[in-house]
Amino acid sequence: MGPLGFLTGVVLGSAASIAAVLVMVLVIFLAVSSDHPALLEEYRPLVRAVVLFGLLAVVAGAAFVGLQKHRSWRWAAQGLMWATLAAIAWSYWPSEGP
Picture 1 (cartoon, helix red, strand yellow):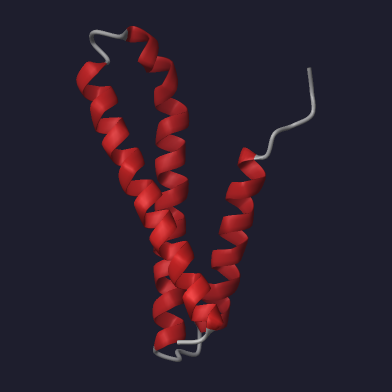
Picture 2: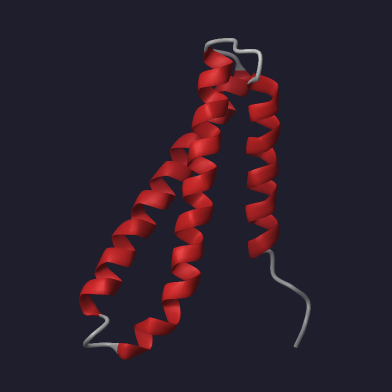
């Protein structure tokens, strides 16, 4: 495995673990939201994060498999993985404002 395969594996493992933990948090929110109605405000950002990191995990998984098996589409998958990662970083980047 080369350096790009290693980096892709790191992105894959990180995205999958973040998505899994966010799903666990979502389950806990569902279990306690009747007792704590303030948690209802957090559902939308939480579900959004689960979807984003789940998508990144799927794309990174495809990129990893493509690299390891030397598929013809591996570079397109790599580009999509890095674009997805950049889009997630951009979406969480703080905006200037008051």
